[in-house]
Length: 279
Image (cartoon, rainbow, N blue to C red):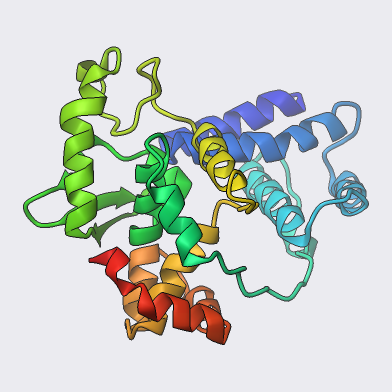
């Protein structure tokens, strides 16, 4: 069986297991490198070693390298389980690197972007509720529980969690659903909360490009998790229990959440004086 058919079989298994389309797309993107490399090479221990060496020589950031390696390991584990290969993945090691404290975005900049008619609501939901972009694009209208003030979020591994939402954000969501969304083509036939002007759900990449463009106008280059970083920092610095923040962010390990406890004095002061944003 050639490498592309093996990859297709693996991706199909992810779909059967209930992985989201965005997650499967990420795996497919990572494994395209595997496809290219093993087109004319054997998928054996020697070939795997050469692939890891080849990948390490690319100019990837450690976090990107480790993600691609993780996808490759998952693929090999699947093949081994299916009896299609017998490769020991324990020797495939991640690059070690120090995790940096997330960069700080001035509150006034976030506030200004939240007022943008096109992307403001997206930014407000990420910043005030700590959603991932992938979670945002997967929201359904039925996930907004207006009476209780919660959003039902499908996180990594299709795990669901309930995230509280402020009254101001709920009012804005209600207005969007009852007005702007109704004017989108075929919106009545689609339960996805956020739709493009063509009536289709946004892709993770497509929505992030819109958000990134809004911040670019303010002279700030943001990455997808920076707004989540600011949300977590905001909550912790204003007295939130770190385990509660862990639950809201959908982190498996509390050590991931603990990185947000380190922040500059300027950020602490700014966040404290602008606590109103989450009310």
